[in-house]
Amino acid sequence: MTLEKTRMEKAEELANFCIQCAEDKKAENPVLIKLPETSGVADYFVVLTANSEPHLQALAHHLERQVRDVFQQRVLSGDDNNPGGWILLDFNTVIVHLMLPEIRDKYQLENLWGGKR
Image (cartoon, rainbow, N blue to C red):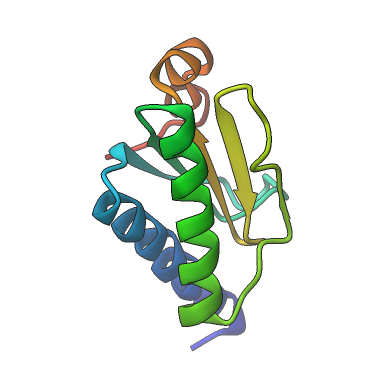
């Protein structure tokens, strides 16, 4: 197995783990987007909807803790104090976008990056 394939499998495992953890906390409409290899951003985007600002904050904290505990990986970058209805958690190979419904509708990341459910 090549190093690249192993990295991609681990990234996919992390992305699916993030979706499962968020769904356990009532996040809605999960979408997993595999980014093109040439993107240089990450391997996957995970897009999730929260139903309120407090729910958004709770999801972000929960995901950070779970990924740290299970994958021994900390968020590289994130802004969970952003009152704009969108929290981004960068786990290097996986970037999680937590959004309120109106923000998600406005930016439509799934359409921009060709996401799948």
